Amino acid sequence: MRDVALVLSSGGARGLAHIGAIEELEQQGYRIRSIAGCSIGALVGGIYATGKLDVFKEWMSEIDKRKILSLIDLQLSINHLVKGERVIDALKEIVPDVNIEDLPIPYCAVATDWENGRQVEFRKGSLYEAIRASISIPLFFNPVRRENMVLVDGGILNPLPLEQGSRMVGDRLVAVNVSSSYWGGPTELKRLAEHRRQSRSLVVGTLMSLIPDGIDFNYITLTQRIVSLMIQRNAQLAIQLYKPDVLVNIPMNRFGSFEYDKMEKIARIGRAKMRKALENAEYTNP
Image 1 (cartoon, rainbow, N blue to C red):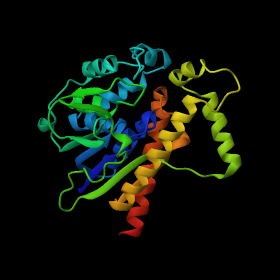
Image 2: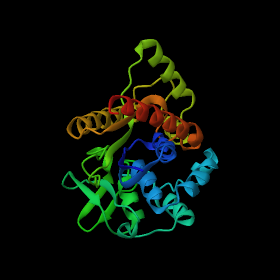
Image 3: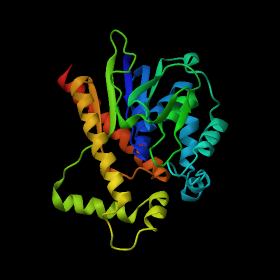
Image 4: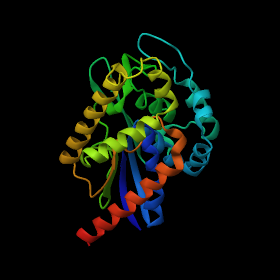
């Protein structure tokens, strides 16, 4: 049995690739002894740590655009659009809450304290409180208020929390980064951009409907691009500082951040990318 400390990045719906990556790891005989995650990585990693990843995957396989809309509890405010309670309540119905310290493996989720600009690590207490704080996308989800902190998405500071993994002696550090940068030349980038426009998620599509036709350079696209560049850069810095033994990179522009209705396709990509990364790691480090 080969042991790993697994780290899962932020990245919205692209993080459903974490499901396939985990399945491939286990199929190839690896044992996950600890897990750290940010945002969607905190969610998938936390569900895995409860032993209910198969239940979560089955639930996600039934998600369609109508179901996504039913899970969005709109609350127009000066600092958020969605309360974020309905989706957490739905998750609790299929995977009950548990204290992190009672999980069978060490787990860590990261969030960002908006007040002082510091990273907050969750290693004990309610699993869903940790997940809810870690996934609090600024301007979208209502921030989590805890003690004297205002907590938002951990990806703001640390989209790939390699340092936070509870790595034990002999563990291989395995990281899945679904916010990797991409460059395929102008033609390929144009094709991908058109694909993304046509398959725009219900959430983003609804927001974009408020913008006059032909104005592609607007506050929504600007915000998305700014956050994307920031996450890409911070993930690259983390990889340089804490070099993982196995790195799975999935380009950020492969899928949109809200395309949760494409779980099967995204999970398959995660499985294939993990398989290739493990093969390369075995070849270079026999």
